[in-house]
Length: 202
Image 1 (cartoon, rainbow, N blue to C red):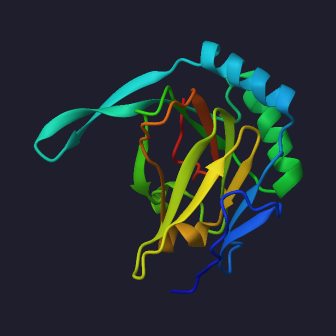
Image 2: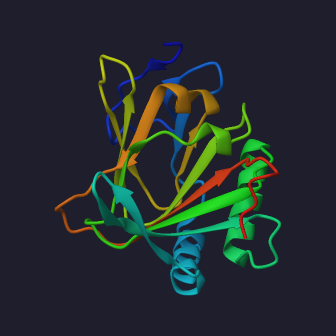
């Protein structure tokens, strides 16, 4: 495996924090990319204005509800909410990456989650990272190597924070947001990607 893991404390004060190192830039967590006022306003507007979808998908021998609400936009869409335009502009200044699509997940409470996974490589342009902006309540993400020893990294994603994951990291690591019995409020994640032109979202 070409990547190496830095085990860090969940509340380490270093910022930005390198969680995983690899040739493509690794996995880096930065608090406070978005100020608290803007993060709160974006959360409220997206919660109320986005046409959220409740999906169902096959799992083993049955059809189950996806445990979160979802939405997606191309960044050149006329229907792109203003909050997402502003978020994309912040990311462009911060990363210099040509992001062209954003996927949204709405975690309504601790019962909503996303299973450990890596992004589907055929839906990404090679060499470009995935940028995840968090809004709303803090939720814990687990990042785990695909090969032994599968020592996990845990990071609490705060409102206004950025998690930047390299393309290479999708080859060697899985990431997910587990369910929790703790009382947590709603959270919205904005996952910005560079999609192939053939992958057109509405």
